[in-house]
Image (cartoon, rainbow, N blue to C red):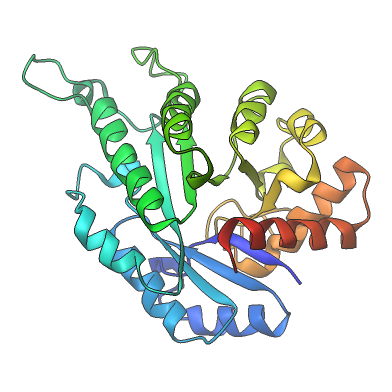
Length: 276
């Protein structure tokens, strides 16, 4: 049994055939969490999950790159998240990669985009705490070309999570999706009870081998982030949930574990986080 803890079959890339993709995924014995990035895709994730009695779940949330296009409504997302098929609030967090200089707030009366991202992230943390659901947390640093952004997205997320963790403690849990930080940051997330999620990136880049070796298998989840980040040997094709096995294989190789142990343990980890 496997579970792709982060997929986007609710996105346009799967508009014509998400049913077929889900069918072959379920027939393989794997499960899926479809993750929203805005209200429309969150609603779609719930609608898809409701079609299946088991094996397909949803997460709802407003992705930081979409706050420019959508005003976050706490009550609308709360109503959606109360659905029994919703197992998490996400994906939410901070994303500095696509920020343009003019969005940082150049007049006193303007709220810069970074502050806006933080504000919306905090509101969604509060929603997760109120509903006792885990967070699926997105974090992406500024590009090397964007020198004007001095803040670290990971450091800011850690500060925010730590502040809520100190206040609410056991009510705050979740996963750092598509982990891109360093060993020290991974350790800090784990101290708060967050899992580290790995995807197809680890099959074609060696940037995170040290993090993987430092992180106990009990603190790792596997995901695809499909249709993106297709793993080797399917590079160049559309990603899909079944390919999560390639992430498990690479994880087993790096950690020198047998594949069955990796699959079983990451499944147990997911069950613990998402209560499924």
